[in-house]
Image 1 (cartoon, rainbow, N blue to C red):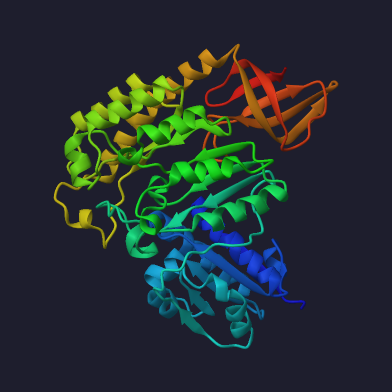
Image 2: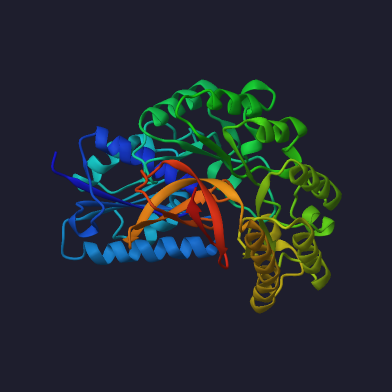
Length: 440
């Protein structure tokens, strides 16, 4: 088959996994995959719809693809969260789009491509609660892979559309996850990054109890897996057993992503978050005692936010000195409970709160980076930047750096290093967010 298909993936790493499964299905179906949009006979846009900004990005991308389609026989397929939540609107509002597909039909992508090539226009959105899982064509560096443990969410935070898009929480059977991880390891993957809407809830629906620790032990037994990284762990579900497993298991990096969103009890309650300030502090004390680095996210400008509640975030950041933090201005999303709340703030006020928190965190990171000078860290070698004066300059990461969202380490070496290899690096200099070091 000579039909070429190009795929544009927008949004989060969980969406990236869906894209990778879709690419594998297309390749199995005999379609040629291309990353050159002009060469593609069929253009697929896998979209995000979590926030207004992500929907705008998706629409802009669709319009860009529609421009490429003008005067050609190209076909456009819109898939993903935008299709799942707003499928009819996209189908009716964009006549240039040949098919709109939700989040539950990636296994039918070859059939859908064949249909649009036959000039049949259709809408494919259903709620069968499947989980997109299986063989993938990785779009990450070959030694790194995201691993989906579940889909959907039962938390129903008042600001979030995810449960209304992705459905209820549902876990992937453990044997399927382990088998897939083994396949990834056999193909050169050395770092697994576990992701879900709520990673810490893994197994509750299937086994009647949370089995994340058991899953981590099963994955740790896989030969050639060197690092296992945990993202999106809800604070109220991070118990002592999980913390001890992270601290004691040599394959699990001492890093965890805990999306707090806030620390003020009143705001947390309005967000329908299950944690409170006292419990958060207890958890973060335990993580600090075990030497586990933390990434987190905060929403600034939630309805009812005050200067005092923002100041509490800043005090928390100064006290706990988190390695990496993202701050986001609250986005009022129609369909969420918070949409109807009183106390919505002006855009400028929300942006000012974000800037205030970033300023505090920037100082924290500079202090942490300065304290790293002289330390030796195990690093993964990611890419060769340049060769100069008999030295090799590589970009790499250490345990407290997740790919694409955290900082990097510039590794200076006297010898050539294989991409994807691990080596010890002594930190010699600190930049604003990144580090510089020499291979030991």
